[in-house]
Length: 138
Image (cartoon, rainbow, N blue to C red; front, side, top):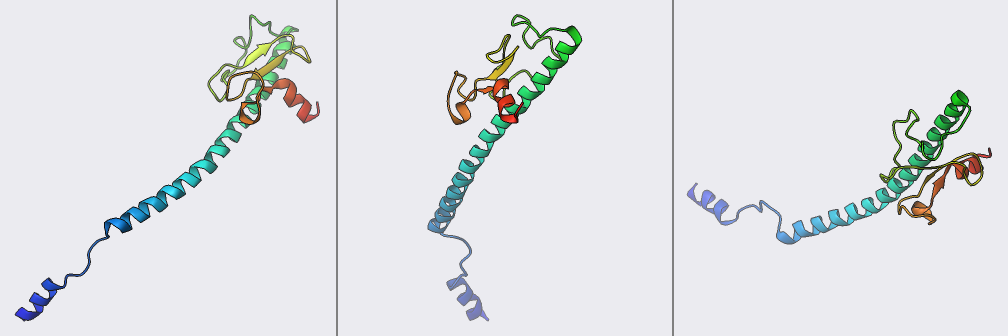
């Protein structure tokens, strides 16, 4: 019996992972997390652009309702502050711009995109109420 206990102590069963095995697993998890983060970032950018388009459409509806009740559009000085809107900031945290008259109509609502500067491509492109109307075929 003493020899059996002695044998168990001399040949212990491997109870853990080596440092190399743990490091390999950490590297694999890091690579997977990086790939997921890149994919999610693209979806977040698209979601912000879509939210800006939706917000602008809602603002346009509020401006049109204001016109029906007062027979005039808000002036540049009044801007969007007199409208019953929950949100007057774009997804990037900047206020929507309101111009009356607009470039192609009585008014225009604009978000300058992610970069906050006029022009741009992709996520940095301006989003305008005029552009929404053209795409929707109005």
